[in-house]
Image (cartoon, rainbow, N blue to C red; front, side):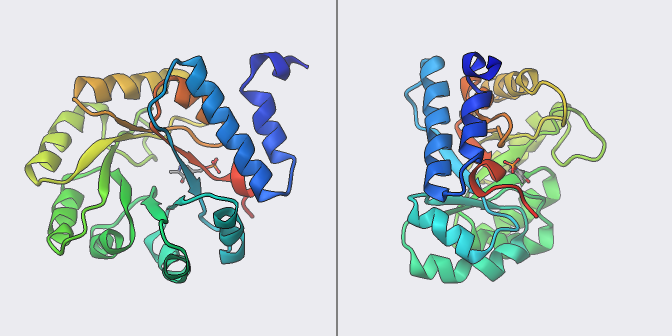
Length: 235
Ligand SMILES: *Cc1c(COP(=O)(O)O)cnc(C)c1O
């Protein structure tokens, strides 16, 4: 029963063993609270339920269980699922966490309250123009924290310039986002992202997914993006 002692693994596994969305949600929230206490934190931590590939009924169950913030990785998929839900439920908040093409910037700004995947100057230009229409989603700059060829995000060395561009364009930048390399201990990458944010005067940290959100919270995550631990494995 090693997991009982090491804390982060067992309760996540327990959250996964139930089919009840409310129980899963409670389990994840409990883990976030526990990790925050461990780190001596009392600042708010936003749980983003990543609902990509999930059906409207599955999402509705999670809303009815009390979850209000959701994340999608594709603009087009979000446009098919969310307009009716946004009409039906008030107080929902939507985050875009996947790659964004500049030609979808207007659609993204119209639908989302947070955009976590800003990683290049051309996208900053497109978003700034789209925000002239009035909506101003919170912006996160995505950093390719493991310097992986296939991953989204700007190179670590390019972040200061990208941030300067975003500030010059008056985007409402609140923080940084990253997805660490798969299959290795994520903590050093979370710590590095937190340091880069601190060095650049940013307080928002979007980091941590189903397998590592508790670790991310202990290292300062202000936004965690949790999919399968809430909804079950994606098909
Ligand atoms: C899918 C996805 C998540 C959630 O992944 P899980 O492992 O299911 O929690 C988080 N962030 C991003 C960017 C994603 O694409």
